[in-house]
Length: 153
Image 1: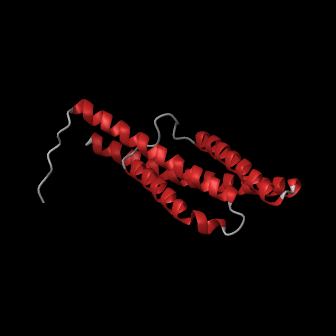
Image 2: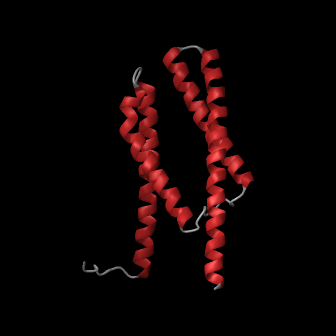
Image 3: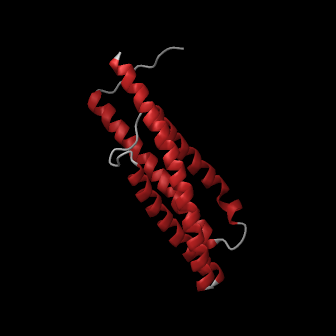
């Protein structure tokens, strides 16, 4: 197969990468917003209405994470530590538990049940998120060691 010539100079290449990154995040959070809106508006069979968006969101997120870890990249701003995993898990769990509670309250109108279900949801998501981030951290650190050994040789 013939290699296609790149017509971009270095600055244009950097700008193209920035545009691609921003586009990814716009689509990523657009899918999150679509899932939330459809979940809020639909009374029954929510999973059926948001299955397509959920699959695309999960596939894009999984690829982003896997590709970054495979290349030894964790994050631009967050340190690769258990403490940052704990904070991220807490914040994400809190945000989604509040959304879950609001959707349940709007759907069923029972405040106490919505609050209790949101608390259980928070705990479950917090534990799951922290475990997943911790496993990813182990893979990341292993990849970092491999890359450092390659550079040392």
